[in-house]
Each structure stands twice: as structure tokens, then as C-alpha cells.
Image (spheres, helix red, strand yellow):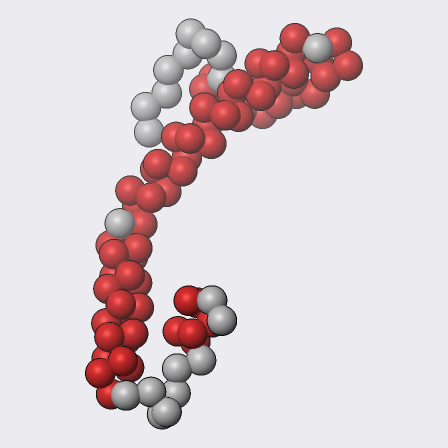
Length: 88
């Protein structure tokens, strides 16, 4: 059984100590993610934005994808391109 399956299948047959440990780990993980959600979203957006810009630029270099690239650049706005900068 994997670790995640073990957490969700914990029941009365486990000792009180094990249930307390599992509850504390799940609780702390939830709090850490919740309290840092804004930072996590910013980090994911930064990584995704760089990759998105790179893919659109690559598409512009290939003739069969050029039209899609131009539409994507128009919908993405001024944040695309090597010389543009965006501050969120």
C-alpha cells in the first residue's frame, strides 16, 4: 500500500499515537499549503509564463504554426516577447 493510501485508510485498529501523528502531519501540511498559497501561485505562474512565452516564440519560427503564434501573442498581450517586462 502506498503512503497516501495508508493515511486515508487509517481507522480504529491503529493506535492512538499513530492517529495523532497522521492527524498532525495532515493538519500541518494543510496549514503550510493554505498559508503559502499566494506564494505557490506566484511561483507556478512565473514558471508557466516563461514556458508559455518560449513556446509561442518557437511557434512563430515555424511556418505551419505562425498563425497560431500570432493569435496567441495577441491574446497574451504585451507580456510576451523577449524585450517586454511584466510586473504583477
